[in-house]
Image (cartoon, rainbow, N blue to C red; front, side, top):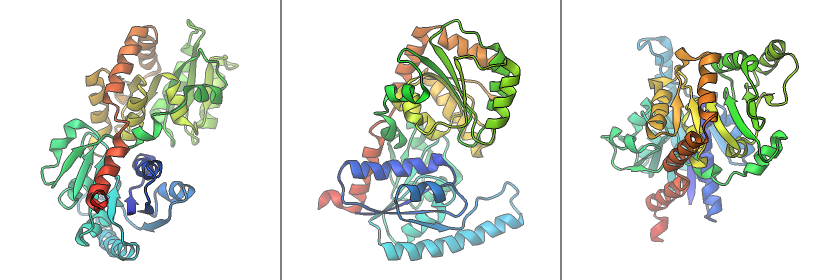
Length: 373
């Protein structure tokens, strides 16, 4: 089976695609992959590191101001992207094309549909993005991460609830390895505050405000602040100025390379509400306080976050309400009540879809005719 993967811009669009490739390997499928990404996205670095053949096209998204020079350039890039995609697809001859989000999916999946190649579009967020809404009228199948999203694609030929394949990738993450990587004892309880791989200014500012307010009422609790590399030096120095020497229970890091393992050891996550992150916490049953980014298209992170709060798996704190004091009050409320954490964990697990990548690969087989061979 020959498979084209496409998706990019952020890790949230890339890692689900890689999870699908990993599932094919886990199942022992004889699958050959080509990844088509954008010239400007993180996929240029991440995908080649996974030893998957990679090609790129030049594509950007539309600006909010409809009649602008950049939007005319985007239309031209889309047209050229379709031409380039058709050429790449004719050369590779895939049995199926899978798009996992981002602007680059537009020309690639559209080109595949025009060439009569079976296609799957995966929508990770509770509210569909413009690209996937457009593609839903052409794709063979639309796969969604939230059950409530099934009815948001009235133009689609076939919609199925699969969850996010990132959940499959992290389901067996090892708690002990997560603790060991941080140098923490087996009994440690971790409050993990994550600003994201590129950092989030509002969250890291809250870290600075929280640091001098921390009190060690429970000696087992450790606070791990992940700033993102761009803010690390600045935030570490500001926290040092605020607290003096770092107490043993406060850890400030630029990034965590083994995030699933650390999440498996985490008692409470504080972070954004990106789709891949939520797939991880629900697969692992990690309670969370979610601070959705207000700077994303369609405000989809807020919709994602409210979906988890509605189920009892998370608490939502909007960025406009975020201060060190307000966040610490939420943290203390959850960490002081083990029953609350257990109930949040159960609710998160009930939303998890560890079978997600398997379901998508089964749909790949169906569309490509592998199941009938």
